[in-house]
Image 1 (tube, rainbow, N blue to C red):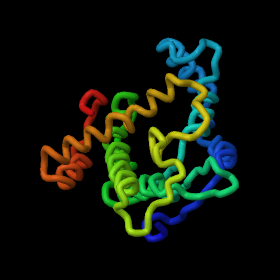
Image 2 (image 1 turned 45 degrees about the horizontal axis):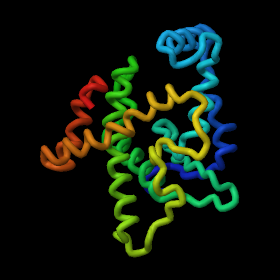
Image 3 (image 1 turned 90 degrees about the vertical axis):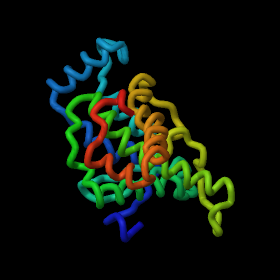
Length: 213
């Protein structure tokens, strides 16, 4: 992993919750607009602090991250005593690092929720599809040395799926959609085209709506 990403670290769930709060520092105007948008869609109560709920969701459900700005992989462990890295989650995040090297993940416009989910359907669908293949090989004895997968069957793999439930289930289902639909989308492109070549071509012409995925 060191040859692919600039840094690899592992945090306990508690450490991750403490360290990720900075990304949710937004203006009061944006916070109120987000509160209103979620309330209109019946995803939260009118008086709910949606930014806080987003922070709590992320802190509770993410198993690993890749930061395409710092080029750092972080693996989150729900076992503070063992701090064992789940190989499936690591494979997922290494997949993001490889994507970024070849396709520049920061290049895409993701200015609406629909466009964001479309792009994530490609990005997360691609690496989650690979993670699924990796875990299948683990279960079927496909690796000579075996696999270390303490969270082997987490629902959402590298991007999400921690042990505690989310603060807001509506936001959770919204965020998990690319992980849920994306792998089937990638599998369809892979099987109906020329394999990985067709998948790679999507990065030059990505889907623009979640409906496409």
